[in-house]
Length: 505
Image (cartoon, rainbow, N blue to C red):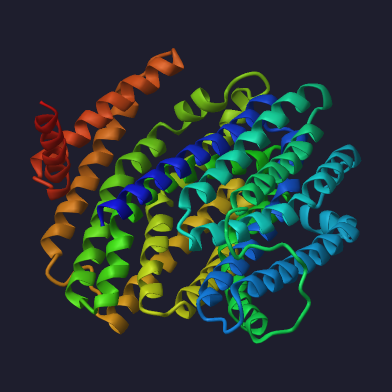
């Protein structure tokens, strides 16, 4: 068990580094191109290739792994057939999207400026072929994971983000925004070649085309298609954001992208911290049929997630302008860009807990063998609640309406997931935990009040000093709150730290 946790911990660290480099790429786009038609073109051009890569690559890989130990044919032949299926499928899809580039780009992104459209189309043509490499890379990562080589698959994402960033920075200096498109393609190629090298020692690995029809390929499609639908629903938040923000003034799509990425980065890291601890135990306890332990894990994980996300979410809300300034406000990203981005970050900061909690709760549905209900709830909230809120408020609120749609739909999805998990599987958040819930609510309210006071009373002209000072005060205040309310999580952490210090002595 300790060995597994060490592997999971190492993979989590690599994933965090990969996300950090990926976020650095977004920061570079903001600094170099600000909130202009150039940055809008980069963000828009990458939207569809990234959507296809995440949805199709994730679905095929998940389906491939689920059938890997069930196929009656040899593993080598199964790999050959799956490789052929994926190559043919994604190549045809990419060709179709490139042939139909003009109607897709014109209708979806509604670009009226001809110069902007030419940049958008050029970037799109550079970025779209990268989808083939990325989907195949995702599949090869799945093969490595089946073999227990988690480090290589995790490191490949770091390779992709690092090469994407490096090439983009070098080329955009001389070529402008088109350099970002070339960087995306080169990054995908680097990731692909790294994984080809990584799977070379897998005994059953073969890239030989195999067009023979077999039962495992029918099963592959049968499993992959519903996953594609579910994955598409989750990713449609981004597509819907792009669609509506392109109806607004120039620079809004870029600002929306920056605000989204700023809120997603800490959210993803905190989710990694929780999943590293909880999910290995969840699989074990569910497999053993230990219902009581699963219930305890559910409540414990939600409480831990709340306590981790709360300080970040609240701090981001009250210090949104300062955070945007220290990360982005250089060169082309000016005060006007900050004025567009900061209010969006405020709204997205309030979505952190609900989006993270939805991902967390969904894993308990999966552990129960139910992937249909979370997908239905996602469809209802993304296509129903989200779009309804945006359409009802966009004339009055502008870009904030798009962020508000994400918040309200995430809250509704959260309530649906919690209610059905409780009624169908008897996993209750409240049961005997009413006092704990009350304590958490009080901590949240007090911490909000503290940050409101900090925002009103601490104001330093130098932007870095301002954020550092407010962060230190907010952090100390939060630690005092946790000590005052005697939260078990803090006592466990301090106990482990003390234990390690004493062992070193």
